[in-house]
Amino acid sequence: MSQHQGRHFLQIPGPSPVPDRVLRAMDMPVIDHRSSAFAELAKAVFHGCQQIFKTAGPVIIFPSSGTGAWEAAIVNTLSPGDKVLMVETGHFATLWRQMAARWGIEVDFMPGDWRHGASPAEIEAKLKQDTAHTIKAVMVVHNETSTGVTSRVGDIRAAMDRAAHPALLLVDTISSLGSVDYRHDEWKVDVTVSCSQKGFMLPPGLGFNAISDKARAAAKTNKMPRSYWDWEEMLKPNAAGFFPYTPATNLLYGLREAIAMLLEEGLENVFARHKRLAAATRAAVTHWGLEVLCQEPAEYSPVLTAVLMPPGHDADAFRKVTLENYNMSLGSGLSKLAGKVFRIGHLGECNELTLLGALTGVEMGLSLAGVPHRAGGVAAAMSLLEERTHSNASAQLRVISS
Ligand SMILES: *Cc1c(COP(=O)(O)O)cnc(C)c1O
Image 1 (cartoon, rainbow, N blue to C red):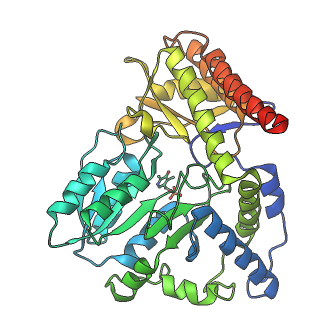
Image 2: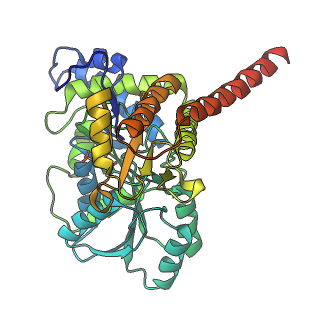
């Protein structure tokens, strides 16, 4: 193995790099989770989470991965034998569907080509057919991390409203929250599922459920057995800043700092930065003559870009070249995309220059691995970023001179 100097480039779409500020915030002695000092911390993070999820309702924090938070959403709202509507947007939607099936849920899984998001029109049509209201929930993945496609949750809510269907709306925002515009209350989402290691810029270990009054009411009458994931068991002690079991104390220090960073930058600026970096990435990819997996421009992911390899070239062999030569990890193709795509993460602790470093590594890797491409993709990304910087700078000048 070659030895590398400098930082590893962690360009996978989660876990994402953890900012130094967050690492320092977590470097603290472990405190008594039944003390008043802990309650202050907990109340601060509950309040901060409400701002990030854009909700006035409770946000539950589990010591878990995102998968645990998926399970919590299912077992608190549904009963064995319930019917739900899901959309095959990619690998993560498929895994969530498998989990629902294991809990005895009957899933109507609308097929997809892994290159488009969930279609609001198709969901509306399905719900309109269901005049007896047997569908208990619509479950969608906001940002499908396996494909780099972001579904339009606001439009899906509007479609559900047009169908006047009472199904719950459960949304996986595991790789979108804190990076892509998201509004739990405004979009009347019933359960928003998320976790710590993507847009929140934290190490893995926290799972989130933001819940509506309607979801909480469903939890009072549903028939699914549960214990660790039970919302009411959490909400009672949470009201006073406590947990029913030992929380991930030091991750909560990190969460408080990460929320402060997101709010200091301003969520609108955070979202705009992600869109800008994603656009620069696509400019490089198209210049190279490679194909972006997502086929719907309105659904391009601000978080990651999945790139198709030219036929006859293995994405994993290419990723090995960038790792061994340039100390950079790129995301692999998952399940049916294995070997066919690689994924460039551009989320969280990422800016113009770190992105250009990553794209440089990709361009040099393509050369080294003998993958046919047109040189100059990084320059194309630079031009796009310069243009956007100029237009921002002149907008600022106009404000100053007016
Ligand atoms: C990462 C991811 C998951 C799984 O989260 P874990 O923390 O690995 O359990 C689920 N859904 C999406 C969209 C993801 O990106």
